[in-house]
Length: 431
Image 1 (cartoon, rainbow, N blue to C red):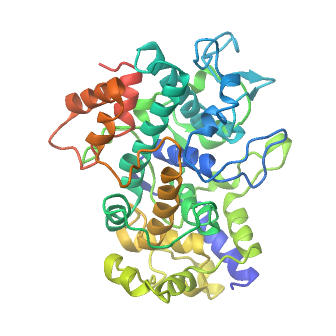
Image 2 (cartoon, helix red, strand yellow):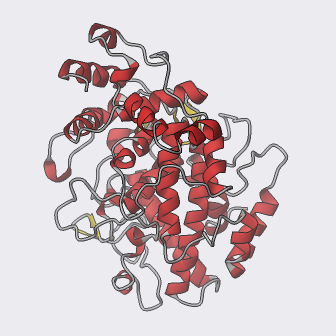
Image 3 (cartoon, rainbow, N blue to C red):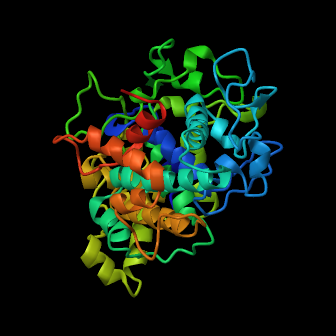
């Protein structure tokens, strides 16, 4: 295990720099929503009763089936904009605290508004006659979210060979227990999203270039100046980006975290939180295996040769892409890297940070695959169906979404043919 000086050197080197990537900024918070769905909170806010389960069934939005009616009005819809505050439409709040099943979805104004958008989507299915009641609406919303998770989010962040193995050929490799969230996911691999956080964001018409600290003020009424424009966070999946018209990009998947993540406001008046320091210290406390060590453990399993042959899993060869004098002074080598920064470095070696490498992709794919398969309402039916097949199973809603795909199709789009922008366009009635 690395010593304290090495951990300090790793933390120092990781903090303070964030390069732009190629994935739209909204997916950073889409991933955070997925995490809050299936990963229990390490330190739940006071009064929290929800315990996240490793099932992607949107209980962070609806609560359990028994709790669901308490969040809906008599029409089976989520109350929105019914005089909760004197400001813009917002989540229902008491004393500034959002009355939603998952309090972490109010940790910042972006994820809070993503939660609000999904409430609007539920209401849309009922208002448009696409669902007959709240339970059917929940089923439809859940399946669309699962489809977006696979075909939009994971298609971008996973190594293509791993995406195809899991979500085209339905091949599992790690045999994680579906009833648990493995620590390799919650404390390492899925924290790749921290590297995608920007120091500031456009897309708030009344607050240009809003700094992260402004957006990380949790559990307060939504400020009119911070109502976001979704088109600046989720763009169309074009192969070539045009920075003048496309949505802003999130950070690159690499070992560097913006310095703003070291000054996250704590809950209930607590001091600022340093995300990098906390992630590394927790990994040391729970004795998480180091990155190189973990790869070797996988390759020593009975199916190790098959994994190596099918996915080309191997150890990261050098510290290239992770330079820093502090690392040199502390004699930090690749074999000393905790699993989290190792996976971030692997992404740079694999694709210059465009997506995760094989190890990070395997961990994320397996856990989220298990979470969708375990859901009572699931797009998985004895295998993974195509986008066309899933949408065809959703009745009139699927027809409407298919129409959005058709009218937006362009020759310069990528193979990612169903995305958040299609849903936003439908719900927000974009021309």
